[in-house]
Amino acid sequence: MSRIRGLVAALALVPALLTACGAKDDAPPHPGAPSPAGSPLVEVPQDAPTIQEAVDRVAPGGMVLVSPGTYHESVVVATEDVTVRGTDRAGVIIDGDGIRPHGVVGIADGVRIQNLTVQRTTFYGVLVTGLHDGDGPRANTDGSGYENFDPEKFPPLQRFQVDHVTAANNGLYGIYAFNAQHGVIRDNYASGSADSGFYVGQCHACDILVTGNVAERNAVGFENANASTPLMVVGNRFSSNRVGMTFLSDYQEAFIPQTGDVIAGNLVVDNNEATSPAQADGGFGIGIGISGGTDNRFVRNRVEGHRRAGISIASSSDLPALRNTLTGNAYAGNAIDFADISSARVLGTGNCPEPGTSTLPAGLPIAGAGCTAQTAGRAVAPEQVARLAAAPPGMSFLEVPLPTALPGLTDVTTAPQPLPEGPTMPDLASVKVPGRSLLSAWVMVR
Image 1 (cartoon, rainbow, N blue to C red):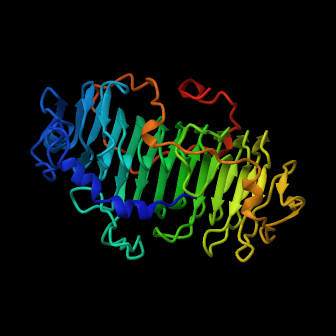
Image 2 (image 1 turned 30 degrees about the horizontal axis):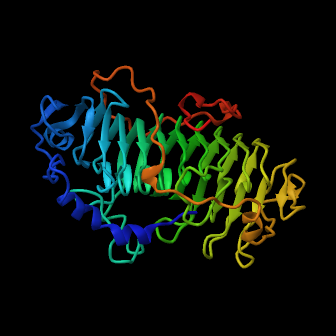
Image 3 (image 1 turned 60 degrees about the vertical axis):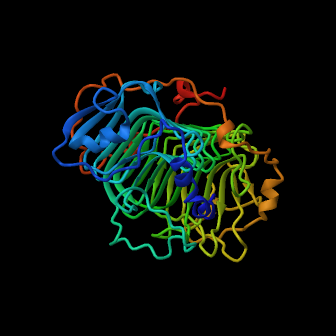
């Protein structure tokens, strides 16, 4: 539900200017892709004083191994099959100091980012993307958004993995995959993001797995805009955000509509957190928001404790939410389990509440008892849902409390193998409704 493209366009040049005038310990400007004759292992600071210098020296398929310390730099990985790995997840900190736009950006196929912390960037902590100009991510600063995006000019990045990363207090996104395919985002933690802790956007035939992650104290825990099948979001904890998850069809990105994802076995609870940045559209107290999303399957998730709605269905501009199915999910403690706030002019069809759930408007037909893939929704005014709970004031992303140390990789020295062609997706039949203790050892908000 949140789109801050205007902010990105307006501020795109500011962080670069600030970085040029930054502290003397900032990394030097990115000098371009490294020579193929580099080393298979480059250690920081033993072999190179900065992570960027190490990335520029490492050979394709090699690893940059980073020792504990705070690194005041932005890093761009432009060599294929490179791993950037910290030796200590909590001790290796890439700090944007509230002025640099990003922490680590992967723009080469096969990138892997592991076992470190990225914090206090103005845009995103970790980004993997095929939308770049060769030296870093490409910003659309002419105000045209993504209307002129050419997939042939900017093919999606292939094969990536982000795991055991802590992304905290970043100005837009914590961990962000955009125009990328065949990847895994797993065992990460994100908090304090002013847009979303985790974001997957603008990919068709994404082939991405998001699993084992925790998001809290973000405006939105997980966001998907125009990222479509096959994409699985399984076994994550999205709790104590303003909004747990959103699935959007958005004209500001390519490949509309968003369609065909599987969202299963996630814990989506208590997303009413005041100690967080404000959500751009005023969202608060919502578990899962579907805005123009189509043909998604929500299976055996636990959606509980939301002051406005467990599930919120909405249109996006002239795009209706269509045929999103809900099966075997557990609901408790929501003000309303299922609310349809679509525009009366753009009603969705086939979005059927489950048996035993409360609905707004009241008396909506239920799946298996009058609601089918052809049944049109009956909208209520968004204000009716908003009145169920007022959104508290937001706070700066830089002021959200930082997380404590989280468990990292146990083996940091073994050289990684190249990533496979795509992730192994879980067997949906084996996914169960999670208990409220799912990944609770990682939770900071009690």
